Image 1 (cartoon, rainbow, N blue to C red):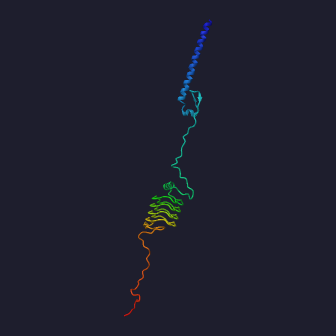
Image 2: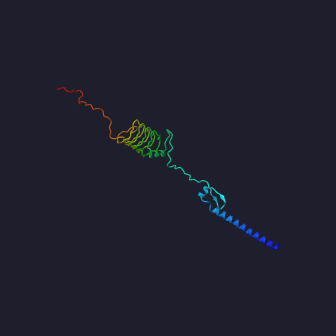
Image 3: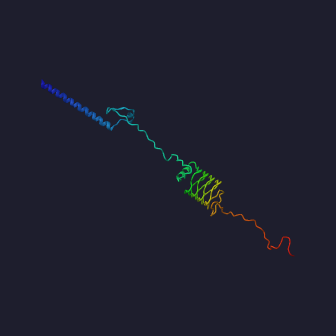
Length: 216
């Protein structure tokens, strides 16, 4: 009888050991599946439990980070009197074309399209504006002292109180569409114009003769 009881208990313990092994293997299998197949973001964000691991996993809020578009960002406003760069000038020309009071001195602006711009009171001293187009622009009180204005166009522009001291205007197109002659420095010497001639005085052939008289 004792032997029978011993064999039964041994079998019982054996089956219990097998069940424990199966449970442990099943748990390990679910754990491995959970590693390769995590919960969906929607469920994780809502705080649902992971049924495979038996734990509650919440993923961090991953929002889309927007990077500002530097290309479309507004140009940084320069300080008053600060010299503009060529890039800043072209940006203004693409938008407002308002360069009033700006510092453009000493810049290389050869052939630049400055037509229909506001350059009122701008500082353009010593700038190279050869072949630049300033047609129809407001150039009132602009300072172009010592600037290179060869073959530049001033047609229909406003030059009231503009400073052109020592500015070279050879071949420039003036406000009335006339051409400035070579040697035009500080002012436009128009081609084809002649200096005022003094009034001519008729001198008699014989100075001793007087009108209405003489020897017979």
